[in-house]
Image (cartoon, rainbow, N blue to C red):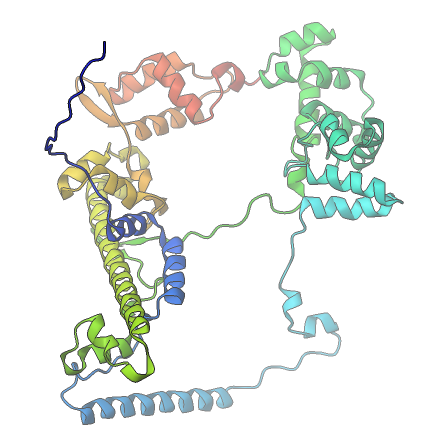
Length: 497
């Protein structure tokens, strides 16, 4: 038996958010920092002929009463520029001549060339390859060494197993071990090691330290050494605590666990350009957008001229200026669509940039108002702040606030800070009193910096101090969580022996 199936039409209401291209672009622009936004603008200037950078001096018929006045302004501007130029050169020639260089100075000192001032940091890989070329005689060995060096990280460690290299190159593992041994004799000492133990043993051989306890300590007790379990090391090696401490000092002062960092620059230098600038004027703070970094955009002046001529106000009318006998209907239609698309894109970009400025400024204004005490007195006075608080005050969504502060920085009297820095989670300290988690972390760090290293403070001691001095009541587990988040070791590892 088959059940009968029935079909029917029904109307249902459903709410759905649809992202238009303009809205999507505005969201994207809001999330960009200044460098990323500048790159976007430069790309749009290349792709969109209806966009242009506004000139510093614009004399339009709208802003002048007549053409004569406009021309007079331009003439005055040119004359002023000419006078400034003449004045500059007159001052230049009136200056005293620079003193002659004495004959006893070297040629290198007398030549003012760029090579005297620029420097180049060689990378670790290039540094090792140069050494490889001086000790390897055939192409196969060089290729193996090149492959090995290519898999050495910035700290100087080999990040791939010899078995994988042997499989990739189809070469016997004994041959690869031989070339690796050659690389491990290169400068800096310890480079090419596969783990910390091997790295330190290579350096021990380089330093020519003949001490069997030192070698045994490196091979079997590095973990105990990191945890400062000197009693265990003393018991296992059969030496006194003072001897263990001496060995520990030798490793600390003479060995480098990251030898690759000595050569080149491990990280690319990144320049921070703040999105906002906060200046202090007596007791008041003045907030400004950093607008000098970005070019000001306008619609192309030629297009605006044609658009305003004879009351033209649409892409169709602008396309009508093209002579009909020179273009087919299809070409004219494509021209209209192209102008429409580029005009809409240009307006959307300009509108999105202006909206971005307004949103970021409004968010930053509330942040400065809320964290004024921190700006005046320091980190111990930072207050809890959430995205929801700002979103409610500006009547926008939390995601908009999140995008507005994403990867944005502000230059303040206390340095260049990320906008995210000002958002600190609130912690209930005592009897409903809310304090900032960042403030608690700073207090913990301050107490530890002032502690007696012979008797360092335990997490319980830190909790008691917070309650006695600040009336902040926290559990030992919470103190432990904050301490570990700051990378501060436990009290037994901080103890001075």
